[in-house]
Image 1 (cartoon, rainbow, N blue to C red):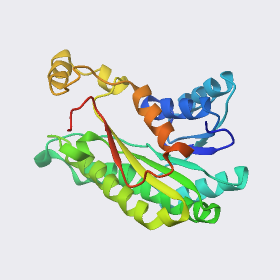
Image 2: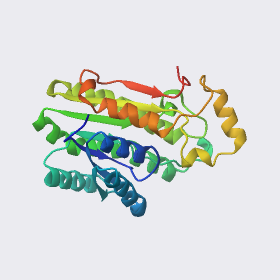
Image 3: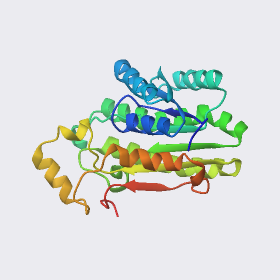
Length: 246
């Protein structure tokens, strides 16, 4: 259980981030639902949390902005006094073949997916050090483990998250702070539901379990890593992919 814990989930207005926020709240955490542009969806997530008897608040912040991220974390600490769990889920895609990929699209993905996580970790680390406790969970991807054609920017950002996770784990472990990553494979979300059936079929063939995962599969693993039971696990990357990347 996560009763009394304060959790920040970035990019939590929909998809995997929303499911993580709902699951942490169901387990007793007060959840700060971060969003960038989807205010309505973020408020809907908070309403679902409250309807289920949980506590939550939606807070806007573009985590790729270093200074805005500092203000965001300072606000959470001021309002709640501590941060026990940070889930870096915010991410975007700008897919294209390498030869056609613009510098702008490469930078946009790296700034949100990788620098955004760095910003949030940096600005919350001092508070966690004071607490001598904390759980940092970064949402990477099997694309960061295996690579994927047409996603050089996305794969680079998700591979970078794995390196960041391990470095943070080594730096903060002695103070009771863990840092781990989850690497989802093909998950049934709004983004994958619109894929052509032929693409879905080809993807399914790559998965030993022969089906896409659910957002709940990701959220349950994040909730475990955020719990006291996972206190001796740090620097790890857990692929939640039906065996795709093994």
